[in-house]
Length: 548
Image (cartoon, rainbow, N blue to C red):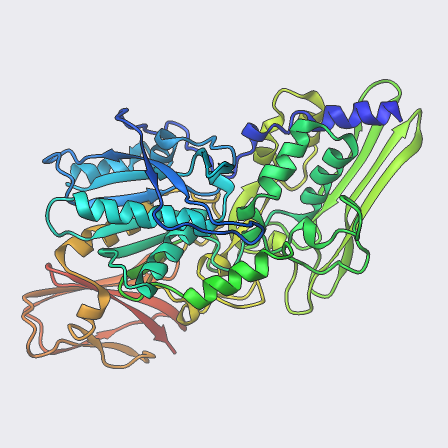
């Protein structure tokens, strides 16, 4: 068995904690100038599901003042996402907002906005070591509450805040803002932008989870075990992952699958409890809630159900090799072997490991669903210089998987991950949704424009509720024409109407000068859901429009 241990050490020692990546920084990213990192401590303690006492969370932040007056008067908070080990620092978070040779944070600072980056670091509190990037979402939310209160106390003037939450940061922001409302704490926040956040859960292929855990468990290597303990078994991962290996283990075993537990199962004591808590909190009601996502809105899949991820033989030395086969979870109601490992010594198998997955009858397996994508090669740090891992990556037939399903990022409670999203079922009032699946939390020119429009519009006016009687869509669902009513008490010299698809594509635009109180706009749009944006030069209003 010595050869087996050597083999597994080779396979696992390169899965170092710092190499795991769930959010890439774009090439040619624009980094900020260095200022000073400050520490902030929550004033509300949180006790996790598996903790015996409550602890006060901590964060670190930097304030990048605007380039207009250099005064903290229009703060925009940008949050950290899932980042166990704190491998993505504050400058990295700033740089992650880069796109096409520009940086959204730089653009906003040039327009008078102040950027506040809030990072979740490693720290010790009350004698407990906490990895903020993988800690309880609730405790990180308490840190955000303290940050919001501090900014509101320190800012000049009465401009309300904007909170941008990428990935897990979107859940932290939602939880914090809703908690503040429920507890009569004024957030003084006008806009919440969720950025590809897992409101209905996240996904890492269960086959990959099994494989990494098996290698770590069989070797007992400290580095590999750290990946399992601090990443897969972090509180945040156990709260977010819709299918988690801990839900499938045989009683008394740390790696073997219980053959009766083949349907998707979250981490016991974490996943269902967190989703129930989040559902009860809902969304903040005194804030404009919008979302920009990376998953396809037209049903484009990431591979296909049951597809082979890898099926290869890895040569370790002249006498030792390993057969590794991984698959996506299967089509609805189907069962397949998702993990299949055989270690051979002189051509004879000396160790085998298999796991099975079944998909529910109402949806195919989530691995191939439309969604913001994760990358297996990224998760393995591109091999980290280890030839066996490099050979494994080169043999991948399917590198990308659905990390944040479209249904989840839109916060639509639909058990079918592959259904066409009905935006009427989403709690958000405005959306950016691409046609094709994009890498998780990737900023594009189109999504950046969406966020910039939302942030800028809020300065000229307040929330959507105060626009609700400014322009009226006389008939919705719309038939052969779009009928827009301008209330008699509204002064409008020019009105521009733009129709967007749910994926953010501009389809029609028309401008009226000195318009009458009722406008008729003929169209040839296909049946479906669209967004109608109305702009009178002073404020904008976006209305969900259904064409029948």
